[in-house]
Length: 361
Ligand code: F6P
Image (cartoon, rainbow, N blue to C red):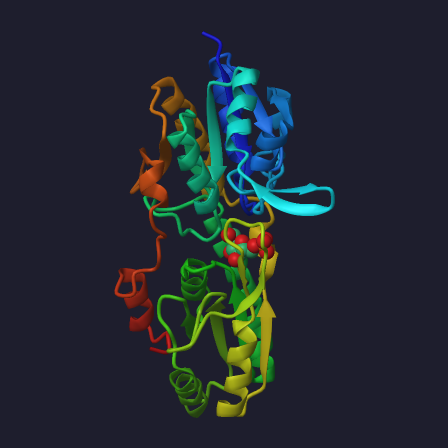
């Protein structure tokens, strides 16, 4: 039976989005003979009815490409959509319009690929009766109810590569080199790249730090003949009793806060407390770019195929999820009800502490 399915990629882009789209199209179009409609720029395309038919030729050669051929947006909330009328900006609930748009197109189910913000809207559409399947993506790895999101491992690879490169200047110039990485309110990228890159200090949002303890670690290293140190700091890290550093707010975004700047704060404090020269590198959107790692290509492909199979089984309102080595499904509701933070007494933190990595707690 021929079926018509819609798909969109929402939120911040990440490596592996194209790999999921490819898997969906190859399975749905190539294997089952369905039709796939891709909406451009996340929910914006759904609201504005901006779409294209995805054929096999559209997804040929995109497995290795970062970004998303559909475009994405982390600003457009269809339930609170920014419109301008007579020069005046207002926010309007466009969800009914979206439901009408897809009904008119004859789309029976939407596959929504995104992080917590995008999937929270997917859940709200499901409540309005839309048939929805979720696919979890984000470099932050902060989605609850899945072990890993695709994009995360590629970001960890990029951050680890940066730490390896910072080591040379740290050693040659006897400096403290600080790498600020993304991750929003979760410290996964900092923790995993810090362990993989041999960092001396890792600062994450889940463990508020005391700068004196960090300085002590660096001074101890100096006294032991190690005149350099590497610090990986998550953008959401904060001093004990202090706040996260907000770089800016983006009013129309589902999560308006943009973090950034904690690296400079740590650098200023440490240059006073250690008398060592200190430099900061903010890795930024480099972490979201580039070709997906083999792990992410495989995970994204598994998610794409599983999403199509969920449609065949008519298991709507579900999100594909990795649990252990198995792909399974959880309700979107469960997936977005809270963020997945680093467990402060979990195995990874304990491993890091065992080998002497300082968290400043
Ligand atoms: O959620 C992905 C992410 O890259 C976060 O790690 C980061 O805080 C945020 O998006 C940056 O958003 P923007 O692309 O709007 O600057």
